[in-house]
Length: 217
Image 1 (cartoon, helix red, strand yellow):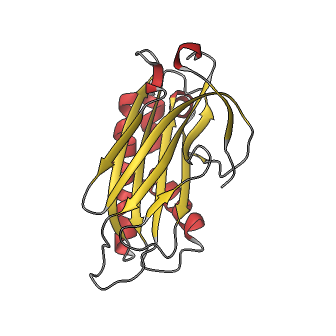
Image 2: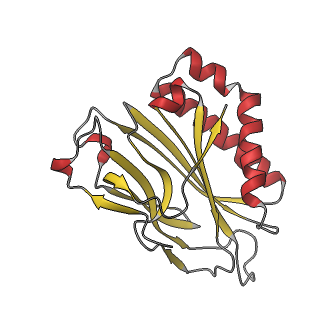
């Protein structure tokens, strides 16, 4: 993957009112297969959802998905450049909340992006996400919405014989120090996945790489 970003900033140079951030997966390790002890290869994939202040006021979800065919137990996936994009690069406003699902596919993953994108929109409609955000466009509402929506998406994917491996959530706020937790990297793990998530401060993007998609509700 090509280098996604340029003009990375130091935290002391970062202006939270104007500068952009990116949330990225830097690395993950498949620690254990979900389906079978004798399974040679797995096909994990990452589904990410995010809502920032603008997305809460004009109900929109940032969405990205990336599959990984032929991954063995113990393999570590490192991303070139800055990493796999979960959110941004954009200025989030007062907040951005995100959730990341690591799933394991039980079927052909070539059409995965299209089917999961439709599933997110359908489940968001059923859940009434647009009305909830319009009524109370705060990070508390966004957290509740993403938590419920992620659970519904995972349940639907498991009905299609996929397995949930790991789930991560985060809330980044502007009015803390450092704003949005810029330059921090968080590691999380369970029996199946170990992952590293980084928050990168930016001034501009060179617009190369797999950007997120916006689902307008």
